[in-house]
Amino acid sequence: MAQRIRVPGLVDLVLVADPSEIRALNEEPRLDRRFLPRGPLVNRLIAGRIRRWFQIKGQPLPSLAPRGDPVRAERQRELAIALDPADGRALWSEQQLDKLASFVRGVGTRDGAAITVQEIVGRLFDPLYAANPESWRAATLIDRFREGFSLVQIIWLITGRLRRARALLVERASQNRWAMHGTAIGCMESCRRWSECGNFGRSRTRHRLATTPCSAVVSPRPRRSQEPSRRVSRRLSSPEKCRLARSSC
Image 1 (cartoon, rainbow, N blue to C red):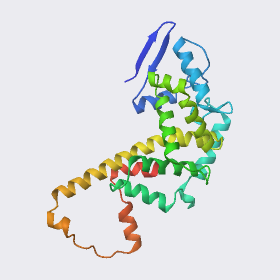
Image 2 (image 1 turned 90 degrees about the vertical axis):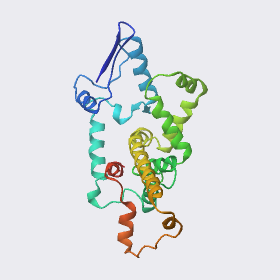
Image 3 (image 1 turned 90 degrees about the horizontal axis):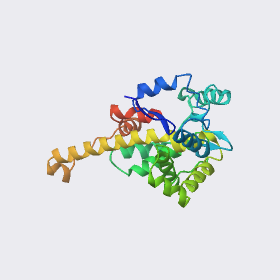
Image 4 (image 1 turned 120 degrees about the vertical axis):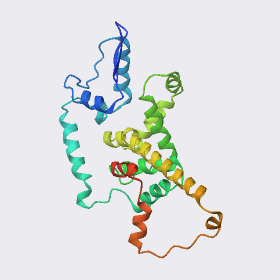
């Protein structure tokens, strides 16, 4: 349920976490997303932070562009066409998908899967986009920074850590606002869902080991050979709760 924080002259905010309320507010025409420096002190500080850190060359990242922005609307239309899987275009490589499937089965680390997701998203905009631990750490820092105010964020500002993280992500995105948004913010939810998939896969693995007789673990019965397509299908199969993550990339 939405929570309002209001102290005249100091702050006037509404905190929303429920998805349905967020969607309703997103459709509210009075929320124009212009982030003008007006209102109570804290509101002006938040608007100034958004304008400073979430822009490239003076233009806001797509999700923060003003309502009705024609460039944003046209770019959304172009991306919807370009990323439509119905045209047969491969949105990821077999190697990338194999890494994610392995993670769901309990092999690999969360950071390794997250870097793969970041690279998949980045290469939708730039075929040469390269993700690595450094770019993923930068993305997680930006994600934490946009959540609100805290003492550690002040330290990031003073030490220049936030500036360096943002500069790295902008450079990797080749100054592309959409690529920057996708690899620094948009991919975070997909990564969280893949993490849930990995947790589910590991719990199932532990359950199988706990309920399998020792003789079966020591001397497993060999599986019968399968057609390559059947093997790939079985290997990439994921729990129902995790399939949304695969499609959201």
